[in-house]
Image (cartoon, rainbow, N blue to C red):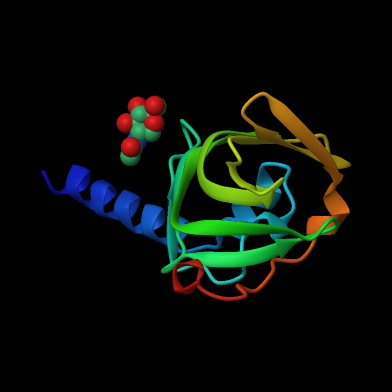
Length: 143
Ligand SMILES: *[C@@H]1O[C@H](CO)[C@@H](O)[C@H](O)[C@H]1NC(C)=O
């Protein structure tokens, strides 16, 4: 009777250790640069089977994205689905362009470039612009 219990406890422990890593490492693993996420992350979970993830930043966060200095806001919670070179069903990241906020719905990577999807519109940027995880500039809720 004890054996299954022990393996269950071990499984839980290994899952706990796994999810205490950094979501930035997960990005690398799936072919993305770390700079897509702010440096400060409170917690995250990812289902390695489905690729569904939830990132908790602790608070909303504002970042100026290179290279065109678009203002981006990150919600406290970011959700989506990640597989090799592709993030889909993304929710929680918006960019300011043409006097409007646009939700980024997906991101693709080919190693060299990132393609950001805003609904059916896409924009391509070199991945090297996102090599470093940026610091939050301020809390979006305060403006
Ligand atoms: C992970 O995703 C798979 C496939 O969708 C699902 O069967 C499984 O229950 C999920 N695991 C957890 C812990 O949510």
